[in-house]
Image 1 (cartoon, rainbow, N blue to C red):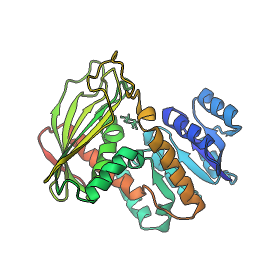
Image 2 (tube, rainbow, N blue to C red; image 1 turned 135 degrees about the horizontal axis):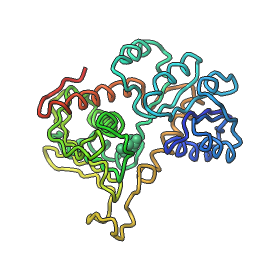
Image 3 (cartoon, rainbow, N blue to C red; image 1 turned 90 degrees about the vertical axis):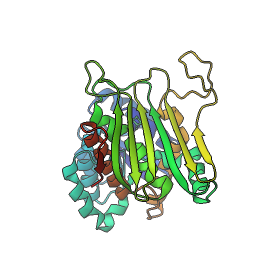
Length: 322
Ligand code: ISE
């Protein structure tokens, strides 16, 4: 039985904890969260040991593998420590938030230890995105000409700024774009910025474009405070047709619409994806192999998200991803 330690029990940590509780080959062995009550609740329901600091949890020889769902700016330090202790890691996105961490990731990528890290890019495990990828791989709509993706959240915390918008929200589009088309993102551009919310440091909506190596443009629309639903859309237009991934049945989107398919948040929209990605990670640990999302994926997505962030102060400029 694999003994898992969870760091961070906010929304994401709790989603992973409830999925872990359903896994046959793993148990939640220990938990840490600075908000004691969140950690206590999970500890009570799972029988896990409560830690007062994340480093001690990582170092505990009883813990076999680490799941990191702490605030984004802690991710890299915690990943490094876990890897240094030879522990397999699952880390929520983004892998890194600070460009100065890029070189450390590149160095670690040259070693076999890099294979012990999985990134929480759960969309790759979503049945509809996986089906879209299969259709593209088998050339169902000919060669891709452009794609349009929308990412809409009902609400984000007041503290969520343009940096979080790019690094924590659009980072999903950065990952899924290169995964769907099997290409790297080479440049990013902010096309237009909505108003800066009063009392906040974020524009909303934001329109942007990612450019892949082949020149394929991917248009992104973000709206992170729509007040009514969580909506993730994606349409690919090819030389002989188009495919649209729309997770909704009802298209008149209103708060009061009697819409059975309306997702309230990413936990419900991607519930299958979250449990599948976790099962995949655990199966890899048990089989001593690496098949899933990698540290290299995490680095690529953060780099593209930084380029988007740089573009916020230069709308219309094409920023290279470096
Ligand atoms: C959040 O952190 C997530 O990871 C969700 O998947 C994403 O849709 C949301 O925009 C982020 O804030």
